Amino acid sequence: MNETIIINGCSFNLKAIKIKNFVLAGECLGDFTNKENADEMLAEKDKKTLCDAISFFFAGDSSLSDALCEGTKDDAIEALKQIVLYYQSLFKRASLMAKSVSLMAAKPKI
Image 1: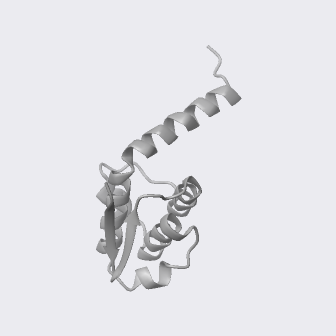
Image 2: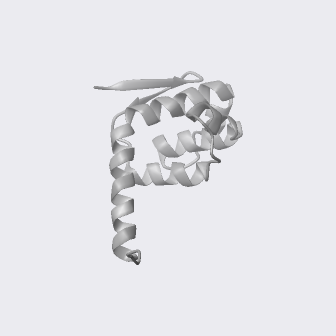
């Protein structure tokens, strides 16, 4: 399955995003407060941060951010939601791997 996201006239194919880019985008977005859903979590971020994260997903740096910022904040939120939905299984596997690695590094005392 090949899906395309269009933001402010720029189209991006969701297929081969590197893990490094996921990490960079996650660092860019930072921590989320305890909100009920993705809309609320993303709405608390400013448009520049959202566009930076999208740029990190696709380019691995913030080079696309300025062009993406010409669109609306809602466009950026919808794009990030599409990315997360498309790669949901990858996010789950990465989360489980991170948890396993952290448990190997520091086993909790029982």
